[in-house]
Length: 226
Length: 248
Length: 66
Image (cartoon, rainbow over all chains, first blue to last red; front, side, top):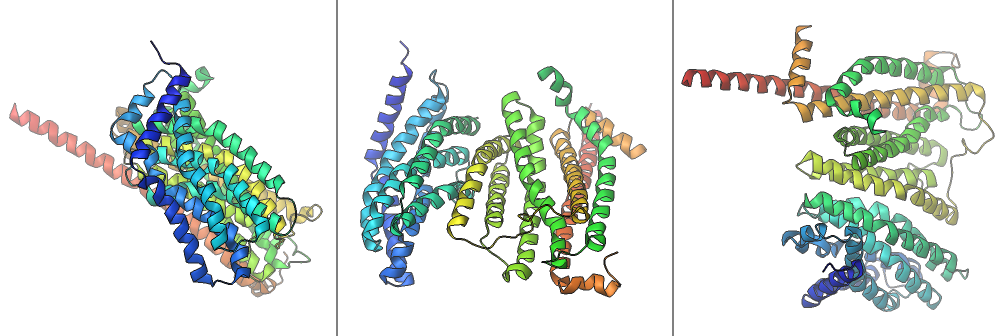
């Protein structure tokens, strides 16, 4: 009997979760990277709260972008090497849906931990308290964009075997709106105006990205597998 | 649609068609561009605020405009290539990308050189310059991805997907950069915001735009022909084509 | 004609350096693209000739063998 699309989605997600849970360092390393970058800045520009507080949101977001790139290899690399990806393209269920499942798991294990880590980073960078909720909110609605767009780039470069620098070339320009609105929201919160318009805008962008990117990921997987 | 496109899906037909048009478009581009630029440089009146420095506009605005159009054209080619599986569209992508990147570079460079006398600095984080810089990065990404694959066909397909993703992102990027710029009130070049330009400046500018459009067309056609030849070098029609050329 | 002499035309009302730098680099870049396209074309033609000669040689060798 043929599995329904829903069952297939669940199966993909469960499998990905299991694979990652056996290799926890893949989840931990990008987070540690963010923590390191956050530690470097006070050492580089001085620990004064006036400078640090102003650049905190920007630094955390840039670190998040870079860590997304770092963690992107594990999205498809192994699956490509052991043939799982090819199997997925042969499934009767829509490939975009399965790709969405992989993106969702990737977000659960890279985006969500980042949201949880954010208060610690904000503390280290002396972000004033007014900005905290805005920072966490932007990370919560913004990191799905990170996972979804990174997945497109990772699927495009998976067959090359040397993603790294090329991937950052492809993806960083696409993250610019995200960076602008997210740090803008925190800045708005810091100067005492409303941050929610930007957060809502980000949430809209996030929905749009989640809706469209699985199709791009699916197309990219087909190109890479052939 | 398919019936109309079908004859144009044959490489030799496109190759010959481009060969027939290329000389005329090139001559047209050279003539119109020379007219427009000489007109703009020597005959158009000086701007009452910016003096003669505004003459950079005759290169800056057309290249900036067409750098955008070329990106869209590239994405359209990628879309056609995906939907109708036309090899020709994939090659068009490879032909358009380098021209687009050069146009973007020129508009960025002339913008910076214009900024020096106007703002007193080579680089200002002005909304227009910043968006243009991001467009430049988008182009670099597409080209880098295209060249990263040893197989041109896969490279073109991958780069096409990226170009389509980029073209969806461009309006969002523009909007976000405008918003960001309004937040940090920077300088803006005022030539465009002023009430309509005098005809004595506008007409040479339009001439230059036409000239650059023809130039972009000619350059893309030249590259397209090269691309067709590269992919089809071992086909019999190429033999006939090139040997005829040698005898004539 | 906007300018009274060649000298004035080159000076561009004091902005000569910027105007000519912008135009110069632009045309240098465009010229490079054109030249690169032409060179790619001639390289392809050479490659074609080489390929033809190779096939001729192959055909001749086949005749000699048989």
